[in-house]
Image (cartoon, rainbow, N blue to C red; front, side, top):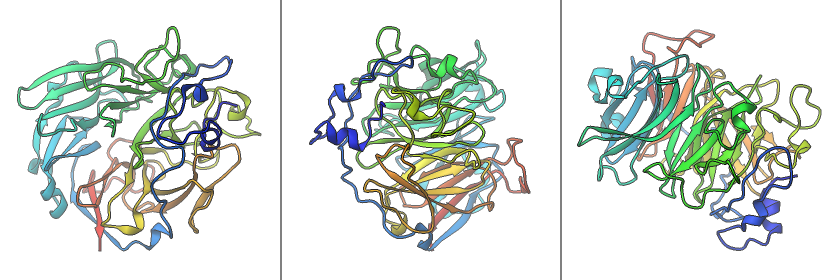
Amino acid sequence: MHRPTRRTLLACGVAGLTATAGCFAGEADEYPTGEGETTWPATPTWRAAEGSPLDAEVTATTAVENLSIPWDLTFAGDEVLFTERTGGVRRFDAETLATETGLQPDDATTVLSAGDLPDRTGPGEGGTLGIAAHPGYPDPRVLFVYYTADDALRNRVVRYDVDTDEVSVVVDGIPANDWHNGGRIEVGPDGHLWILAGDAQDGAEVAQDPDSLGGAVLRVTLDGDPAPGNPDFGAGGDPRTYTLGHRNPQGIDFTPDGEPLVAEHGPLNRDEVSALRPGGNYGWNVARGGPGGVQYNAYGESEAFTPPILNTGADTTWAPSGSTFYTGEAIPEWHNRLFVAGLRSQTLYCVTLNADGSGPDGGRRFDADWLDDRYTATAHRLYEGEYGRLRHVEEGPDGALYLLTSNRDGRTLTDFPVDSDDRIVRIEPT
């Protein structure tokens, strides 16, 4: 079985930072895989969190209210920039967001309006989605925005120069639909732009096609070229693709070693968090679980498929969206844990990752033998039902966490929206 996990890395004799491409070459199979190299250690160099994350003493405060379906947020220099799915890009001073309460939309500066995005449209869950800043921001003052365009209905990533007011295309032609648009983008520690693309409801037609930009994680330079060192999917494979076989990924962040972790929506529950491997095929829409499933194959039935580190199963949904790997010191009980925002579950998940098979007490342990054994994941639930649907979570430079709600998107099932929705909630030490 093609499972390039911790055991495989060790078996390949990896002692340094790079694994040989041969260890990740997919064996003959009817499903595509690529050949690639990792750039992080076989054994994590960072120390896994100990104890329960529920021991943290924190306070949650509504920093901003009355927003229109906020979708993504990023800190850059002394600014914080965020998108609204029905609009464009707004900006606060980071210090303002870290200290004030009850801020209103008019308190923010509009950086980029919806009309500034060429051909922008917003069907279903489409619209203005992910945002990332140039790693040198504010020198240059450059932003990257992922949005849905009505020119043949596709998703597009553009580069926006704030000083010259110039918009240029970085990646175009990402499949789009009313649902499953992916949308999160992030400049990784490698300096390249990582793009999460949904399958646009086309399943294997997109996600199992190495020439398609849908159902995939893309990795490109800041100019949109294939990033150096991307995996090779062979003839017909798009060189911008890093992994494929994804359904609707919406969360990405990196461990202190630079290892990418992706959260994605599953079918009929079965949500997942995966540790990405270059050239990996994550199974959609064929495999979505372990042995004994009746609707989808088990990952172990194909040599091509790389399983996730957690799968919520057929009876539980997180509906995971944005995520952040917390490396701050302000809340020591949360240091080196992954946080994932949940939509339908209305919960913030704190995921502890252990490479030695252990984990903290009190949470749900994901340790089935068919999962990727790179890590054992243990999940604790926070703020369940308190703020409604949670679209994204981001760590701020002050060590606080910032939650974006999504209660005015027409998908709520309980007592939301409330009068102050949608909101940015600041979570900080008490």
